[in-house]
Length: 635
Image (cartoon, rainbow, N blue to C red; front, side, top):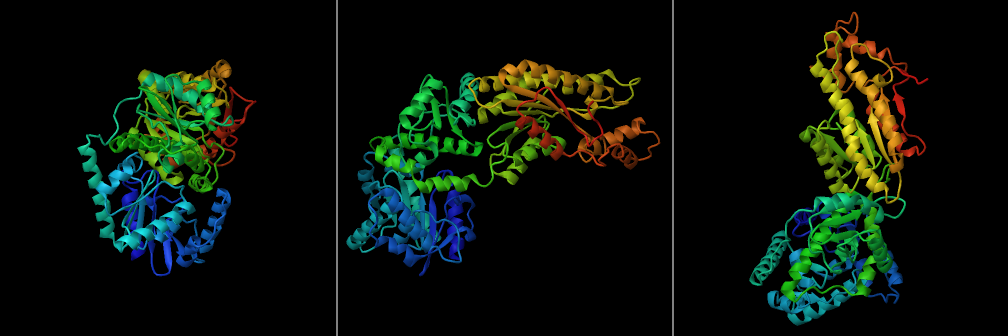
């Protein structure tokens, strides 16, 4: 029952951005023998009873009696070994480094969080004095490096507090860090946190300090010009970063808390002029490339290896900005000194947490931004799933925004948060394509792979085929491909001009683009035409380091294009008499299956593999690659 309570409390606070960002904080429950604590790499918002690491309390307390090495790395290595030995044989996982601090508190439940309202006080130069006025029954701890040193110091301070007051403190504020609250039941925990937040909100109101950041809009021109270039400037030379752009705000001028350092680094690059030289100079001075870049009044850019992590950097950068703003109610911000922020930057514990958070295999397209048009359903969705499975971040671009969002949600549920997102587009309209490309740049910084999949088909005999249907097919399949390449190539060119790998445009053509198709002239003609576009684009865009190829699939019989009971090709071909002697849809399907030497239709996975081949093949462009089970063979 008690594990259920701490899991519920963890999820309650973990899901509330006022208390927790990026899954931070830690929680615990203890009985007479064991401490159950949140493991590293598990977010509070998602934790369940079975996730908690079970530890032997007596083994944890050995840390309070050992004489540790003086050298920090040796000390942390020793503590790590003792902590591992304290994990009970019937449990697993790496316990939070702050387990000893949880053990130092007698309360049944301990919840440690980093609310911005709290850190406005803990990061303020006058925070200690004001804390004694606002929370006279609490314990204030001067900043100490997280881990063993902090736990031992807190244990001693708790003992002093208990000797003076006859009880342990329920609330422990740690300078530039956050707050620990101990309680023996759920109601007590909720009541204490509610009291803390109410007192602080009242104080900020009294001081006329706004709780919240200014809202605005990022400058679109700055975003479109800088984002693609920043992907390379902020990368490690072997790969590009994901660069998320957001509204301009007053970024923190220095490091305020360990969480801010871990996720967003100690310092941001803040400059009215950002270029490769300023990034290089920053890296030389700081020893790392910035994860946060601010062009005051224009935009803020946050960078990481994945969209998920770039969003996390943004969250923490915004939180640091808010904490800096709130700290003015407590005498102004008190930034961490170099010795302290250097410790966090090189802390092995946080390197482990990042590795756990990153998950398993990276995939052949890891870190690449892919856009797939017409991906809300059918073949396009299958292609998008195949690319996501290989590590790509996929924009589901479709005229059906609701369907695109549903598809993106399904991919994220399968492969992880922020692995896909929806983008509305009508590829026949320039302003729509331009808007879609802008959205991808705003979210990811650029495009590495563009898959022109969206297309339409209308079949019928040439003698009676309506011109409006001809124009419809041509506008989408032929002109739409041109419009997409026009805007995508601009971004790829700007991105590639700064170095890094080639980028790719892959058009999903058809076997009907390689051989004629009876009673299907509009479709086949558009596909023949786009092979010509692919070859022409390939020659022109070589100077921009953009490869352009077409993949020509065979028939995907299971998809809605063929199998839709109202408008599918099986129905169209049956009604138009394209298959002589066919009496039913099954007759039409059987006829087309028998035309494939390999005995089946084409699957999205077959095409996804061909697309990946185009990306990985560094010495090929302008090709039309059949994926048709032997039905079409090139001469």
